[in-house]
Image (cartoon, rainbow, N blue to C red; front, side, top):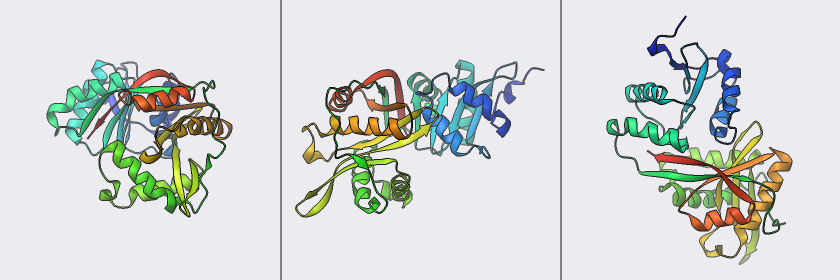
Length: 282
C-alpha cells in the first residue's frame, strides 16, 4: 500500500526508532546532533522527531524539530514536505543546523515565510580528530569537577555571546542550568590556573553531543587576553584524547570556515575536515 503524499512526513513513533538509527548510521559524524536528541528521548519519542517515508513505507529522512531544526537525508520532495510543515506550524527553534546542503536548501524554501535570520553561516567545516597532532597534549587540561560550575558559567556566557551574538541570560537561567549539567556529567574540560590570587579559566570545551561512536566538541573558548599563545591547540589535543578514552572513538567538531585562527588551531591539534555544516541563526 502506497503512502498518501500528506502521510509521507509524520512524527516518528517508538517503533520507528531502529530504522532511524540505521539511517543515521550512514553518516554518524554528520548526524550526531539528531542521534543525540533521539537517544535522549528514546523511551517516548516526542513530536520533535519527524520522519519522511518513501512510497514503499521505508524511512528515508529524519528531522529533529526542537530547540534546533536538524534535517538529514531529505530529497527535494522531502524538503518540500518539511518546508510545508514548518510554514504551517511555525518556527520555535533558535537555529537550523546540520549538513550544509540540507540546511541551505530548506531555508531557501521557507525564507520568504519568516523574518530575516540573525545570521546565515553557509560553510562550517566538519572536522574529526585523526590522532596526529603537531603539538603535545596540555597536561593541565582536565574534566571540570562538580562545584566548579559557578567558576565556568561566566566563561560560558562570554563564549556564547561571542559565538551566537546575544547574551543567553536574556532567556532566563536555561543556559546556566545547561552549563552546570555538563559539568556534573563530566562533559566539560578546562584548564584552570591561579591568576592574581584567584582561579582563572584559561580554556574551556565541552562534549555538547554524544551518540553512538561520536562525541562532538562544542563551546571551545580561550579568553581574548590569552589567545595567540598556543593554548588552544595543545588543550584540544588533551580534550580529544581524554574524550576518546572515556566517551567515544570518534571526536568531531564544526567551525566557521572564515574563523581561520580556529581552523588552524584545530588542524594543529590533529583535526581534519570531513564535511560541511551550515547554520541559520533564527
